[in-house]
Length: 283
Image (cartoon, rainbow, N blue to C red; front, side, top):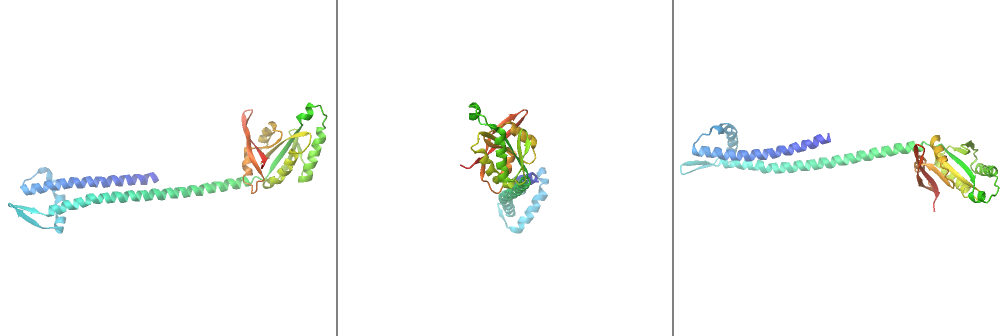
């Protein structure tokens, strides 16, 4: 519809320019018609235009009906009046063209504003829909895998990993009142309120920075994408609290953010790639 209206403005301009050409043409023909009458000749081709010119001359005669004789030839000023009328129409077309251009500019401006308003409303609706969808994701899981720190293993110090894991689980249970399950050779903790994940992160960072002889690889996955969680676990990013891009995106919609997120990298995992992010404490 918009293109059709713009085409209409182009056609209008073409019409006004055509009318200007018609005015010039009739001025020339009118002059020839006047010469024909003054010389009392008869041109066959003029018979086609004569009725139209006579109508114009009748109208102009009402404006100026004066005439005078010069050397026996009668000069009628109605011809001059008719030419003036045609010139007024000719120059009037310039005003009409200008008004058409102004009308087109006003239409384009209105269309642009309406389009932008519609885009803003659509984008807001889309943002609200995405926010609503993201905020509906409340369940998430945390997995923890452990290993003896390199310094201890290289020195041959015997570390009871099972005992260390039990101490870690007891600490988390005491802070968050939650019992884990075994998953992929590590521990999985299930939570129901992603909006309060900062409280869980407070505890997880205490575990991560604890003065224990073991390293921790912590993974967080919002929703129920276990396939992606397994890929994340397989990367074994020890010393970090990692997540996939979708979980990082979900975190943006929380009301509070006591932690920042940053991209770790994009990793190839078999035939798939995974974009990995991590939670970091504000420095």
